[in-house]
Image (tube, rainbow, N blue to C red):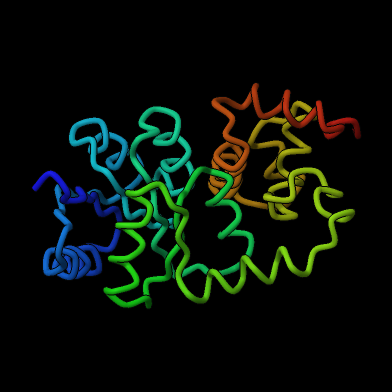
Amino acid sequence: MSNTVRVLVVDDHPVFRAGMVTVLEDLDDLDVVGQAADGAEALAEVERLAPDVVLMDLRMPGMGGLEATARIGTTHPATAVIVLTMDEDDDSVFAALRAGARGYLLKEDDGDDIRRAILGVARGEAVFGPRIAQRVLAFFAGAPAHTRGAVPFPQLTDREREVLDLLAQGLDNPSIARRLVLSEKTVRNRVSDVLAKLRARSRAEAVAIARDAGLGTAG
């Protein structure tokens, strides 16, 4: 049992979560030690169980997977996070990596790919599912060195960069919502995503990072 990798499964859909637990329990060398339905619950379970690997969904109510991944990386660096999601766009992939994920899989990947990824990150490797690996390689192969980093915070989407710029201008959530014609709930979610991607512990820290990069000078 000393070589068994202890796994925590985090997903807000109980049917999918139960199915994943069943798949993992049938695989050699893996032991599912717990489950969580959102990021906050995942943090509590990581604190309680100290798993080797967390399988983390990205889109969950309350605290999402990005923020939870970043916090786990700060508080429990020995626990590896693998994102397991339906999102395969570049923004999601690279945001997860910036947040500290050591692997990225799609929910359609089969049990063998998931097992290899879990065992790989437990050994300290970075592991991607087949389709995600292609996207990562294509990104770096197709981005000339002189253009990388030309846009401040390339890990952010255009909308998230707008939100960060307005934060750096000193606007609160209601003001940002009015400026961008968004709901306050949407703005709260965008701010949470921005903090996770920047690995900022607070709005004030995110504002400082943004201003250092030249944002927040308009208005």
